[in-house]
Structures are given as C-alpha cells and as structure tokens.
Image 1 (spheres, rainbow, N blue to C red):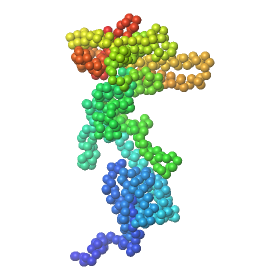
Image 2: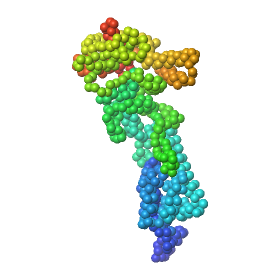
Image 3: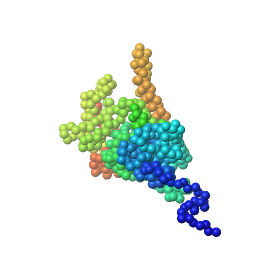
Image 4: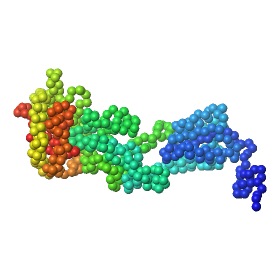
Length: 587
C-alpha cells in the first residue's frame, strides 16, 4: 500500500511518524544576538561546543519567530570570570549602548554556561536598562524581571553552575591523586631538569587508547642528570649555598634549564644559573624517583577586595602538606637517594633556623673580576681558622690574606693574630703540585689507597656534615644556657623571648639534622681504588698548568690548606670526591 504524498513531504512524514510540528508565528520576536562560552580547561572542542549551544538557541527561538543575526562566543574563558573580563561578553555589553545594534534581544544556548554564582543578578538589570530582552532556555521563554519565580530560578541556576564546577574540580583532582598514589603516573607538565618525557605505552583507558592516546613517563636526561647530582653533593658538603653553587655551575659552563630546554622555558632568558634555580632543584622531591603531585595549586583571590563584583583571578602558591600526594612505589629512575634528599632538607631547615647568622657562615663566591684565584676557598689561617681571601698586591702577585680587623670584637684569636697575615700563591703552588703528583701518580696509587683506607678512622669517625651539625647544636645549647643565666641574674624574660625562640629553633633543627644523618661507613680498598680510577689524570692537569683546570682538580681532590705563620709552613690535606663520595686522606 502506498501513501499519497501531499505537496508538503514533511507534513506527510510528520503525520506518518506521529510528530507534532510547531508552526512558526507570523509575527516573531525579531532579530537576536547569540551569547555562549566554551572553556578549554576540560579539553573541550570550541567548534563542537559552539555548534551545540548555537543549535539549542536556534531551536529555542526559531518557533517564536526569532532570527540570530550576531554572535558573541568566548573561547577559553572560565564561567567564574565576570562578563566584563570576557572579551566577547564585554563586547556584547558595550553593544547594548548602541541604538543601531541591529537586534532587540539576546539568547543563550545554556544558562549555566553563561552565568555563574550571582553574575546574572548583576547583568540582567543592564539589559533591562537598555531595553534588551534575555531569552533563556531553562526559563522556557523571556526573562521577566517582575516575575519572582524567574529571579529565583536564575539564582538557583547560578548556584548549580558554581556547584557543578566545584564538583568537577574535586572529582578530577581525586582521580589524579589516585593515579599518582597507586600507579605513579606522570600528570603532565614540564619535566624536571635532569629528566625528559618519553613514551610509556598505550593509555590504560581503552577508549583513549583507541583514539591514539599514549602514556608519558619520565626518563633520565644524561646531559643534565650529572649536574643535579653535583648540586646535591655540593650542598651536602655543608659549605656552599644556593648562589655559590649557581656561580660554580656558570663558571664551568654547565647549561641551565632554560638554556638546555628553551622550548619548555620560553619565559626565561637562558642566561645562566640563578640561586633560585638551584633552590628549586634542591627542594624537588621527584629526584628521589617517586611521583609527587599537588605541590603547587591554583587558588582564586578577589581582583579587588573592595569590589566583589569584579570577580576573582587565578594564582599559584604552594599547597599545604595535606594536599600533596606521593606514589607508593618508585615511578621513575632516581637521581639522588631518599637519604641524600632528606639530609639536604634537614640542612636547609637548620640553615634557615640560623637566620642571617646561619647564612653568613656559608662560603662567599666572588662573581666579578677576571683574575683567577686558584686556591680560592682552600687556604685557612692557622690562628683564627677562617678562610683567607685572595688579593692582588704589587699589581702582579696573587696573595691570600687574613685581616685582624674583620674578626669579631672580643674574639680570643685577636690575642695572637697579627694585623695582616699574607701568603703568596706562587710560594704554595709548586710544592703542592709536586706533592699531589707523588700521591696520585699511577705508580704509587697502591700506597695511596692504603693510606686513604687507614685514614677513614673506623665507623665511629664523624663526617664533616655531622661535625657541622653538632657544632650548631652545641652553640644553640650554649646560647640557651647564657640566656637562662641572664634571667637568673635579673634580666626581664620578656626582653629575651625573641632570642630564646631563635635559639630553640636552631637547637631543634640541628638535632633533627643529626638524627637524620646516616651512620658513617668505611670503604674497602677495592671501593677506594675504583673511585680513584674515576679521577682525571692528575699529572697531566698539573703539567698543563691551566688555572681553571687546576682549580677544578683541587676541588675534586678536596684540597685543604692551613697556613701556620709561627712555623712558616703550610699543611695540606686531601679528601678526594669521586661519584659524590668523599674519601679522607692527608699528610
């Protein structure tokens, strides 16, 4: 049986399917503007988002005789941003003032996409003032400012929009936390200096895997990993601060993160290491091989506290410890051990507890001047034990000197300290280099290994880091005893509250550092031999006589010099550092 098709095929088809078509009114609501918004935070496709919102608006107004003649669609704008700070929405508000704008109303595809919180109550009166109607699908028609139900419903929609955003944020964050804790998954972003992001296989989500998504994991970047290990080793030596380490890296030509990966650091100049760069590396726990997530978070703050309607702006700041998660198992190769990283954090805490006085004890690194001081930081005065400073005397000779006037007033060293202690560099270099050639010559290496093994002093010997922490603890306890004696002598306790709190903080930090240090272990002869084999040829470097290479050699050998002015002798010791381990020795 064949049905007879009328002159209107759609009418016949609608009658066959039972669809009730809505007839268009003869006199409609006229030309309208369309307003919409798409956020890119959830990986939304702007074209698709615009298409379905525009389609909803068009389906809503066409049966009423409405025709969309202009569009205002924001891309990449959060719904929490006020209309005045959204480019297209701000343009729409400006167009309201134009009497020749060409439309008499505005239609939206979805109310919760356009308004957030109390935004509608701030925007609707402006539309009413300029005689522009607002058509909202959730209301089923035009917004009526005199209808309390409309106002209540739009207020509810704004609250639902805000609640929906917060729930989405909470769910996404909870899912990402679980992925880090249980799987150690890399959650994106720039790889830390010393690592690169590589392919980790198909995505575990079948749908995403079918679409070609791949997991990304961290792998060691050999060109930068050694610099990270060096930073931790230099810091754990106990004498170098962040800026001093940065200066040494710049001196040795080690590329900084922004120079090594300029595509990841377009906001940086790439002009060298800074103290803040070293600090960021020392405080990044991901170098232990475990995945961490949530150390920094976005937070919203009012743009103008005196004008709440201006909305919020997004900033980054450190998260509280309870918001940071760590993987249960190692997620990528480690560049430093957990013990080394913990020691570095304890040392930073100890130095921070000392305030400016603690930082003043760190080595100062001269950043200006073209003349090299080969023994810089290695020569100590035998009277006051301070490091002697390099100086140019008689325009051509390099000296190292210690000035009595720079000692603290009342210091016991002032009793026997000459006004100036001077020592010429060239007087020391020749016998020092001759001695090093004898000690580290390949022919006498076996004897050197025996001496180095014997010089370790057994498991009870304390390391330099342990000695420094112990001295800080003793100094803090002595200071507390002095304060107690002052209070007993009649000094008002209120006047000493700040000083006592600082001393207590120093004592707690030094005590925590001592507890966190691992027990010292002695190396076997085979281990010492293996580490010494990693040294550059000492004789070749000394024969070349290049100041930069000599300075680096003395650093690797851990050369320390003490000038005894009474005996007119210099005592030299070595503490070779190879593969971030020191083996102590001397003469």
